[in-house]
Length: 108
Image (tube, rainbow, N blue to C red; front, side, top):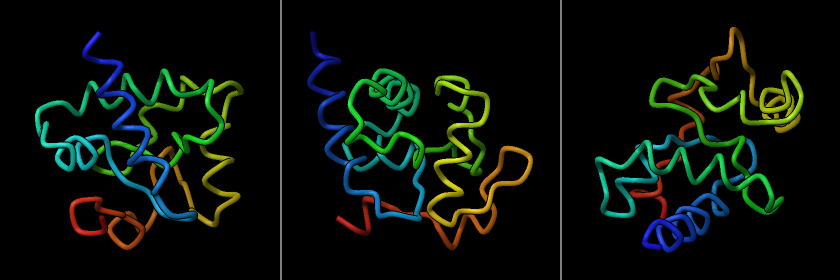
């Protein structure tokens, strides 16, 4: 299936997000040359929970909301993982998002 190859490419990028930083579904999609595929990146992140090497908690929506949090076990696991890395989250939104944003197009 074509999505399996896309998912693997998403995971390669996600694994490079630095500790204490976040990126967005759309930023990963743009880096992969699939700018309109942010939702598919989200599906990849949802499917990644079996692989602890994929830091899915570091991928949020374009305004810093923890839109994928319901795919993590536990009520606030995504937030807890981010806070463990020093990322402040208030009302399900990453604070200082623009400062913490990691853009793979610029960084890789």
